[in-house]
Image (tube, rainbow, N blue to C red):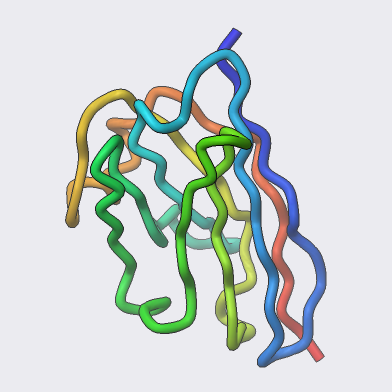
Length: 127
């Protein structure tokens, strides 16, 4: 059974850092495009970052460029989202998603193309 599990969320003060993990079971992440999405209360889900299958091309939403970094550890079958300089507006439930389609650029922020989703992890940025 293909499954994605996110972890690493929590409560952090503004300016702090968190690292989210997205670990796959039942499939090899390197063969999939992985996207990170977030959804804040009362708002639509939005794409945050993605890493393309095989090539490892990355993309970031303008709101997180320079602060977030996506990376992949094939040995651990895990994709990470390192989040630095966190702001209160980063508060949301963060989800990772996977699909075998090669996606890059803005196409990787189209959530409807992803076949597999994790359960989400809460990130709260507050003093």
